[in-house]
Length: 141
Image (cartoon, rainbow, N blue to C red; front, side, top):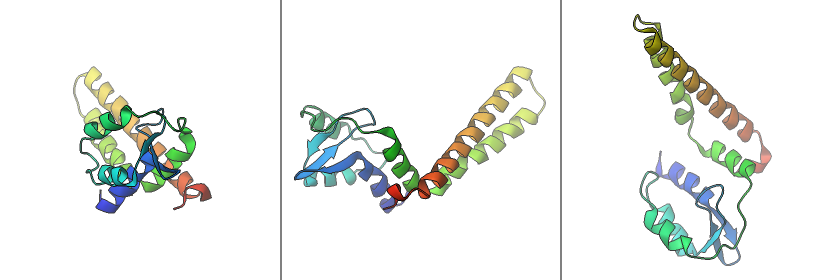
């Protein structure tokens, strides 16, 4: 991820609310109030960094909004996910497919084949999701 891609993905955790923001830890959580400064502190943590201290601080606050609908946030996320993350599963599927084609125990080859199919399905679903979200006017920045 570039720093800009990182920030765009992490921004999906927040929605503007009155004089600050509502923070959503995940799709099922209710929005908790945070200030603009707290939001900036959260966005400055690397994508794969730990946010446990932030979650613990915000979890004690009373919710200000209900949980969000899945579809709109998913479409916005798919628009922001970089293409290499969506193409990579096909490479894994090719590697696993090669393992399935080599001589060896039947159970091992079957496992390689099944996992390769899962990577193919996941990659295809990701690309279809990104393409359909990119054509949705509601998700354009």
